[in-house]
Length: 411
Ligand SMILES: Cc1ncc(COP(=O)(O)O)c(C=O)c1O
View 1 (cartoon, protein in one colour):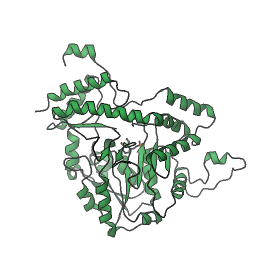
View 2 (cartoon, protein in one colour; view 1 turned 90 degrees about the vertical axis):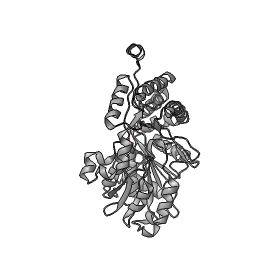
View 3 (cartoon, rainbow, N blue to C red; view 1 turned 180 degrees about the vertical axis):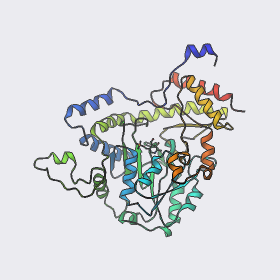
View 4 (cartoon, helix red, strand yellow; view 1 turned 30 degrees about the horizontal axis):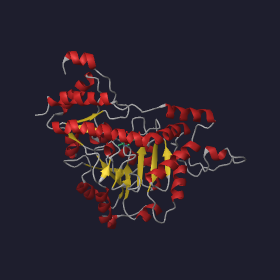
């Protein structure tokens, strides 16, 4: 880009601002005026809408994906002495939740040519202590669930259940980190109705937001009452209190019991209000993401930039992240490109610095040398802005800017 062009036409494009309209503002204002701002009718309505859309028996909305994932593990009574397998190429919450419940993280590298877990390594990592696999639908693209389910079926003979729910599942549980995957599909089924438990994030940078928030959904387990799971989730996430605040306001219903010294991570009705308004707009938001991805793909693929396939015959992604890899560049060159993009007004990001490169995971004994594929993918990875506040002109600007900068680095 020439300096004159740069000055005349420079845009400022942020990475992932929330898409908030008057509809969200009005719904939140309605909650503020209603006299009920914490968990109540709007949270329950959002749970109902999500469960219906995903096609699961129930849904539990909480204050984050992290809280939802922990709750799934606690419902399964996974804890000390148990192992849970996840990938090195993810955000910390996929793994830190395993530590939170007292279990041991077993971390698997990704594949040489894909950001998905190496499924052979996954199978090899299974022991008699393995109780769950946290699969990560990175960027909104579903994992290969056929493969994951066939692995846990093959390893059924090793499985020793801890509680009734695990016993009824009868094999290692699949607890999907669907933080990015709200609205994605796998073989025509919504992500959420594929794994045993799935946990979405509704954090401010996600496709669908409640500012902070998340939802846990699960597939019906034969021999387990879905209401029992729902009730247990309420207890685990609201102090172990036998009645929630709304139930206590009913006439004469002041008395409650504390049945466990548990956690506090419920969703507020203010957050749920935001979600209810987003929910009405979500099909349009997913469509817009697809349009942007198609524009990006048609510009970057011919250049030799590696991108993820978001839409195939097997699955449709929720289009959460536009992850690119520039073949042959070093970590240093990747950093240079990100700076040049920032100078041109386009904020980029990296997804992800593999977990074994972070201090906390080094302290736990993980070493990036054991995750060569994760490192290889990370080294030349650049994530471009992908969100529904982008105008067509801004999309064209990102395309033009990235193409011009990256061309200098591709042989
Ligand atoms: C892959 C992944 N898992 C889990 C989380 C945690 O989500 P939350 O912030 O809602 O707890 C995130 C958040 O960025 C994420 O990217």
